[in-house]
Figure 1 (spheres, rainbow, N blue to C red):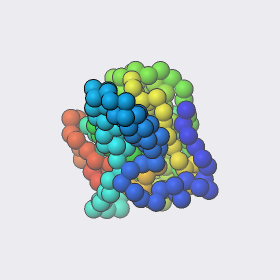
Figure 2: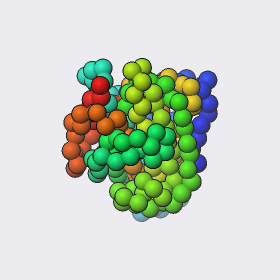
Figure 3: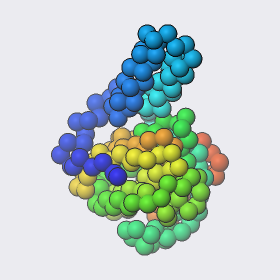
Figure 4: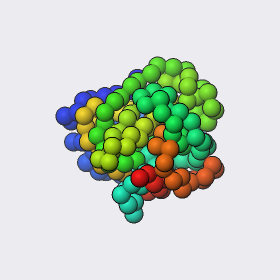
Length: 225
């Protein structure tokens, strides 16, 4: 389920190191098992476990990102590939026409999620669900997911949905309702392959296309009035 510590403490967790703290148990377990098999003289398991440990370090990396976004720009909340760009209706909070942009993250992408805009979190909704492959259309409707509505200073609403995938089984979300996010700020992650859906007001000018590679906190998805 979504991990929500509450509005008073989420930002103190975000002092930057190039590795996300949620990955420490996985990496330390890998180091321990690798060292154990090495001491026992088992070369094949040692090499396999060392490779898995390196992959864990790579998966939980948290690089610094820079953006030249201007007021009204919406930046990507995730690294990955654009799999949906379409006009639809936002189904959870506003039920209003919008642009929907979906980003698929494979296991090799950075999985830290970042705020697409400056704004206040006005609503959060966690939904239990299935674990279908995140690049399938049904994943947006049926998979485990966490919905976040961000209200900008201009009054526009941008909705972000963290969607668990076939392998991803844990959605992590640090802030809570009432917290103010800064554009590009880390707000959570999804472990081991997943998807983010972004719902943007219909007047927005979309600047990305299906199949494009995007980077969290850097790539500008669209501009809204």
